[in-house]
Length: 115
Length: 113
Image (cartoon, rainbow over all chains, first blue to last red; front, side, top):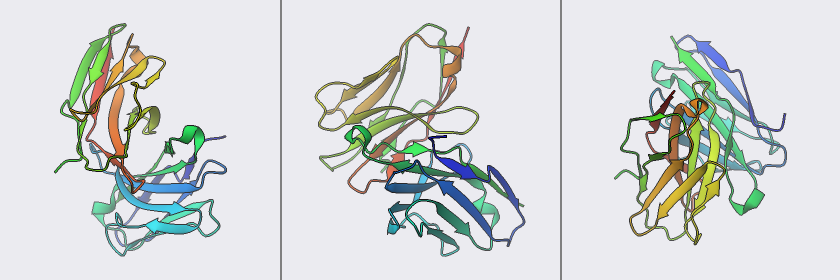
């Protein structure tokens, strides 16, 4: 599998629970992005890593959201004390320098439902 | 102001016909990239085509082409010879200097026999 993978694909959480979403980027890709996609909307940027450095976290909606990429490959998005408004699809993307375009390739997403 | 505008919530096209999906953008950055992604009902965002702001020619990838009109700030996607499998949501996106993608609200394309 050469693409971006995410797990779990589906997650149901009770309000107040903590969740952790995992992203495995394409091997060798330096950049990794997290997006949130609400139902019927386009994805919205959450945060961005270059290797292990988190360069931009301006899109994280609250301090309940935390992302890490400690070894510069796999990344985890953690949401603490989940709320109903956190229900969305969380998309991970990675990019390298193929063709010089920095095209972002997306994983299948994790659909989070908070009850 | 909206950075990426897709004014067509839904489009219908008959199989084997061509269809154009509209996208306009707003930026003051002289260097930017424009992308189109397809999102079928399975949810995965599939990269289709890329256009750089300095590219002189319109991008093409198989049945996909991008009608890039820089002065009008438009980047319309043209799909030729539509197939039933083209039915999906289509998103236009822009990347400025910050590297993150800014997406439009999408256009749902339905191809009928």
